[in-house]
Amino acid sequence: MGFLKKLFLSHWSTEFRCVRPAIMIQNGHLKAVWDDEKENTFGIERLFKLFLVLSSYVFPGLYIRHLSGKFGLLPRKICSEIYVILKLITPIIIFRCNIEDSIFAIILISYLLLETLLYLLSIIFLSDIYSPPISKKRSYLMLVINYIEVCLGFAVLYKATGGVSDLVSNFDAVYFSFITATTIGYGHMAPIGHDAKALVIIYSMYKFIFIGLILSNFAFNITYKDGTYRVKANKDKPEMVDIEKQ
Image 1 (cartoon, rainbow, N blue to C red):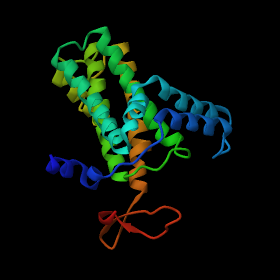
Image 2 (image 1 turned 90 degrees about the vertical axis):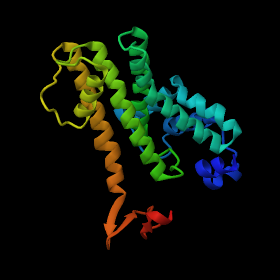
Image 3 (image 1 turned 180 degrees about the horizontal axis):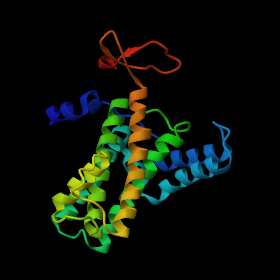
Image 4 (image 1 turned 90 degrees about the horizontal axis):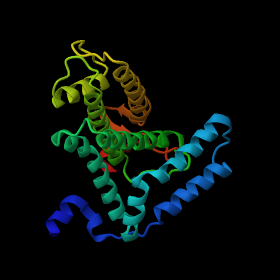
């Protein structure tokens, strides 16, 4: 047991940190946006930021972090990761059970994809009120998992609509989703119905937000100097910090 703790948790296995309840933190974020404490926002930007903060109250992620946070910071982080993994494997379970055509599966996948989309947008538009991550590399890894989750989730929707040519099996749906996400488009599969075309439009905009705005942040924080892989430091620490020593 001690080996497993050391393997997965490192020094965290002997550390306990009390954290504020997640709902209380989210209430603080809502107040910060409403009072406009950080930035002078107005119009559509202000309404959109309020929408993003309020939307978290209708998804399980907030309440999972709230309940698990009662046991400390580490349980909250671990439970959040487990929830992300569960979202990742949900499309696989749906394919495995052959229920991708059911209304329940379509609603469930759409609900989870919407949560992920709003989470990604929150990273962008609410960065002024969110606390910095404990580990940027962990955040990038979680984004990769979100990326795979989105591809698998849309694969379920593609199979459910039945509007993609030559899409026969579940693997075909997964293949088409990943190929479309990378904007390769070999041409042997294409949406032929209005529902499928509308889904591809939504998917394309989704991936634009994900790749163009989120992953570009990774490139912005990375630079290469003297052949060494380094990460840009914060504004209050202008010097370069070796990523291997963080």
